[in-house]
Length: 394
Image 1 (cartoon, helix red, strand yellow):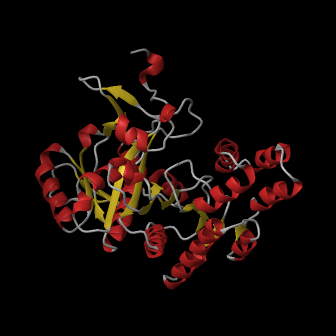
Image 2 (cartoon, rainbow, N blue to C red):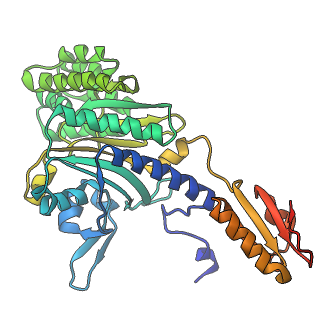
Image 3 (cartoon, rainbow, N blue to C red):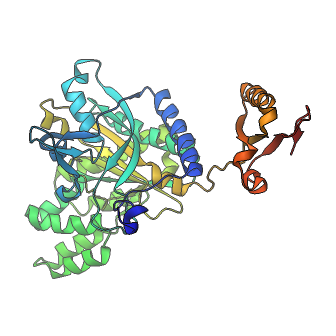
């Protein structure tokens, strides 16, 4: 191996250092406990899936998939998300049990990056899926649980933006006519390139009224009043039904007493093409990208031969860590240092403290070059050095 590559990692891969790992462990434990308390059961799926099934259903761009071949020549992918693998398991096995299903997960996903740019190619997601329930109550429960998980993870300053795929699709269909023209505008919205969106709308061969409708759509964000403005932009029942769903879910969130965390963002779209209804993103203070997202995906399970409505959310653990104000450190560790002739005393002292619930590091002083530097991050220190039978506290 060349010296140039010895300390390098593949593009987008990350090391997790001890203090970050400990913070992440506690955050995940808090989130998992909260999900479990709402009746969600955790599930694991393999890191490798078939390209023709989960790879195709995941809605992640093909160029972002890590692909490899098995011994029989089948194309495999490292799972690019968790929703598609869980849909596979649910359709194959679990939907024969109690429905609706409430499932949860905590796992790494993999999406290839062409260049570094600070974007992770491997990251952990934690989330839930409710499968087999088409009601607004299911959407409200998932969002209320998202709020609860954020708070249990130690975050208070966050906001959830709600949109609706059917409203956007219907508005674009009425004005633009073709899916190709609609997709161009969706791309601007997903990238949050609002300047590009406006310039593109101005260049379209549309009436001034229709151009104005598309530009006004871009401003439909904020409180529930923006839904009343949205009604004025659309014709027919399809878009109005979507707005009614948003109003209803907001009323249900009031019943959970979490409506203060929710705003509306009608231009919100997702890169996940399987979403069919309500969609949402959650933002935390200090993080420049959504820390999580979710929504309703009623057509995905049909790809696995078992049609069923579903909704859920996923949170990126690395972004949650970024939002936390304080990471764990080693200040809670008690260090016991010993010389060879007092090794047994030191071992007994360490065992006694561990049984009392302390975190104890046991170290032979012969293996330490600089005792002061080694112990500077310890909460306290006990020395068993020399022939004295009394250990000294530091």
